[in-house]
Image (cartoon, rainbow, N blue to C red):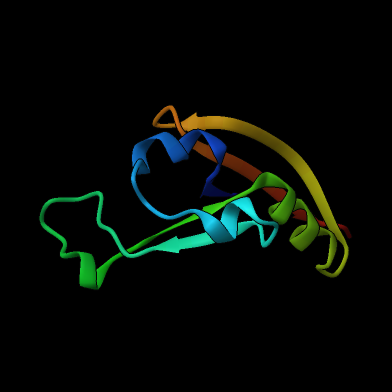
Length: 86
């Protein structure tokens, strides 16, 4: 199980350049902290399109996507559950 900052997270990062995300790479790293006690130079956030994640899962050895829930965590982070086939 893991979470990603997907499409619903973009609204929290207004004014940040999303050129990689919008032009097909499927992800962008933002050097920005969402926590006031952690400096931007020490922390960052990666926004990831769900299609990028599903392509990556498909390239893993024997993956099985069990569930995906958009904005399941904190109203914006996507939740993924992946199982390795027996």
